[in-house]
Amino acid sequence: MSAEVYDVVFLGGGPAGYQGAIRAAQLGGRVAVVENAHLGGVCLNRGCIPTKTIKASVEVLRQARKGKSFGINIEGINPDIKAIIARKNKVVELLRGGIRHLFKENRIDLFEGSGRLAGVDAVEVNINDTLQRLQARKIVLATGSRPARPGIVSGDVPGVLTTDDILEMSEIPLSLLILGGGAVGVEMAAIMAELGSAVTLLEMETRIMPREDAQLAEYLQSMLKRRKVKVLTGAGVAKVEGGSKVQVTMGDGKVLEADRLLLAAGRAANVEDIGLAGTGLKHAAGPLKVNRRMETAVQGIYAAGDITGGMLAHVAFAEGIVAAENAMGMDTEMDYRVVPRCVFSSPEYAAVGLSEEMARESHPVKAVSFPFKSLGMAQAMGDWEGMVKLVVDGKTDQVLGGHIIGPHASDLIAEIALAMRNNIGARGIMETIHAHPTLPEAVLEVAQGAMGRAIHMSPPERG
Image 1 (cartoon, rainbow, N blue to C red):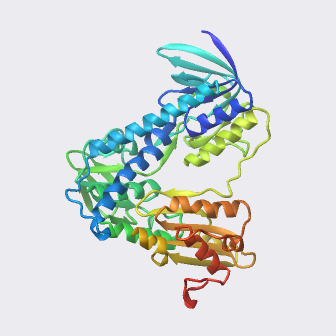
Image 2: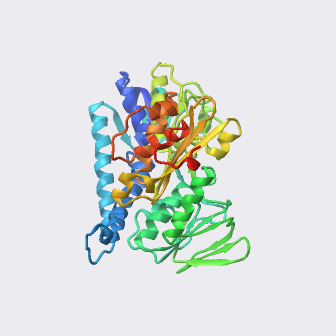
């Protein structure tokens, strides 16, 4: 078995692995990446990009259906799910090829096979039943995650889909139950309802998006209902039975039936079968523990991305880069204070920082909301549902949190995140001239409101 020697070996070529590898190569390291499936990991192949590509098709469908209100008459509007999935696959393949090209440009060696740790300084790769040993001065574990299966669903059950499965659908189910009212469940509910499924969303907590701002979560729930998504909260599930129809027995004994059931109840870190036992790294079934330098308990072994429990691609990007820099001798720490959270539902939801409820536990709070229906650009676009909410410290005027429902919420949240990261308070946002007419003017409006200088709010709405 031949041995190659590398400065850093990344076990996994997803968001943390590929961005970390490129950063390590930029710093002059000899770098290898081991990937047993496709470059880009869950995000590119079975998560962020596929779902957003499908959502883009769905948005075209939604706009076409609204054509008459814009003075455009369009006949015969129907989704072609096979063509939608084919477009999704084309986009994914294009972006995979882009990462492969970046590896070549940065002289990163890619080993396409199943890898596992062989002690604390080596990785063994099984490539077509041939083992290759890679000696490594440092190792970064970036093996990602997989869809979690709740205990009530063991093994493959006919009619039960994971979030991986539904991205390869060849037909649109007439009826769909979705288990989980978090980001993924809400996103898929909006997509599938627009495609024509009768969707029922099941959430065991008292509201969807239970860890987000209550006002905005309730607004989003009302918007889903308006789009004919049936939302059941406080909905514990006792049993799932598959077949030509899926039957879900609720905790109260009520039985729900649908063509398909989608599991959207979280993800599990891939910590099994990667050789952890031989390194002395202790782990339970859950994510690996790391410090802010992304170091594990074993010197020379780092971990980044979903394997550490973050489950957000943009966090994985940052963690992979931090791990790479430390593996290459720098001294870098992760800063988790400002992490945007986005749900690509219809309308979109995005947030950063504290909810109003959380902020009030430790700060004097000013919370200001501005509806998109009062914004010129939103009215011109015909997309005016939603609002922007800013949570501000009442004494310092520093921004504690931002929450947006509406068009391009995932883009608009960046301004608030930038302000928080760089300690630019509500005054700094207010005193920055925003182009007109644009959607970011809604962020300007809430900043003005927080400073007592609202222009397009009547006096009772201020503060």
